[in-house]
Image 1: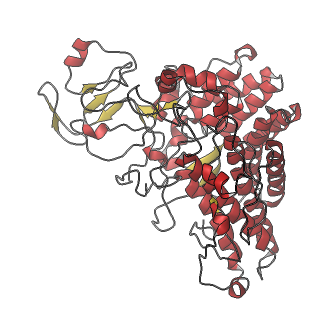
Image 2: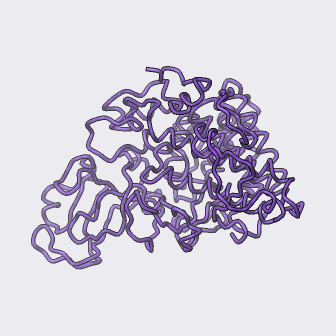
Image 3: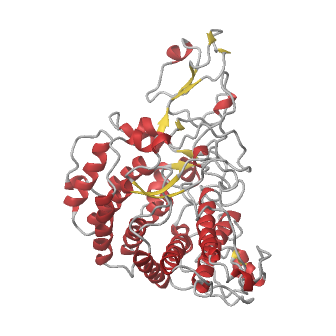
Length: 542
């Protein structure tokens, strides 16, 4: 992007920014020495305010805060668990002692309201800034509403009904109450309808919101609302129609390997991405997805510290989902890790850089086979068993590879340069299939799944009788692991408790997941600051 370049330039227009949750209602945050009188005379102020919405949304996606990544996306689901031995407890993954004092749920809440605040600043001040081209203003307002809707969707699905703050906060106030889930959804849909009317079909600056980005997101919103008590069958019908429109203009890339290739990031399938790039100033924290699902491979002989992984790891169930013919497996993770330097293997044999250092076979090797080779062999069934080098080990994700990025610790800027693809038509196929299924049209659902699976090398057609929610969720795992919020997928379909307790070994070990966990706890700080006008979710008071 040229004008929207993700450099945070937020002009204070008598604003108390909602950047730390309700606590910041009592504070003012002055991010510029420019006076109000000077700011409104500069038309570029409007572009800068819109840029701040993009940047806040992007930064909250790659990292909640230093050393806090993706914990409310995949962790504690059927396909991702914590990267430790199957013992002890954790709050988010195992749902043990998950309470309102949890720091992650507070920061996630705060980040979403920070984005909403930035969007409200755009909306409330658009007409006050002089010299803004009418078309630029229309587009900027629509973009702000898109991101406000996105944040409210994240909030309502994680916490249930939340305060609807639709204007900039210009005076201290703690009198906030939770709107109903239905009211929040009504606002989300209204914002998206406005966004669809205001953003263009195509853009000259790659990375800006288009009509298809709005359609894709609205299809997911309506699909999700369709399951609610206040939803209707029309939500599923409309979700399918919107997804079909996106599919029609975003053809699938011919192969999955080509889709995820770092040299082909901007392709026909992509609907919306966050941009990072090589400029260390505009890159911000950096795309951190290359750090997902990596164990400490560099502790093994012959390997150097090229990449630091984050804590979560895929479950054995995830790896079991891929048929031998499914080309997505090889493009998503690797079972072979090659030496980066010469070393002496376990039987005294010299091994050169570029030769195998670790193998994680799909089917178990015998001990005799393992003893006959110089490299480490980690059998399936032993991923949680310490081998004296690492406590856990598993096939490494390569889907988000960014090999030029230097080694960084998780509390340091990740520096990833890849585009972060947030929406693509591959998911549109899955949204359409799920919507068709819920609208009692399993035939069209099967057709969409057949097309998507064919791209992965699976040529046997899906028939209507094959399609149920578990089939679709398995397909979403194979196609979208690490890209979309798995926790929300399971919650939406009513499968979170069932599938997590079956397939997540740590959650099953502790067996604490229950109905109350379909919502996260409201952060206790928000309740305390508002004097209890914001209330807690059921069964989190103790």
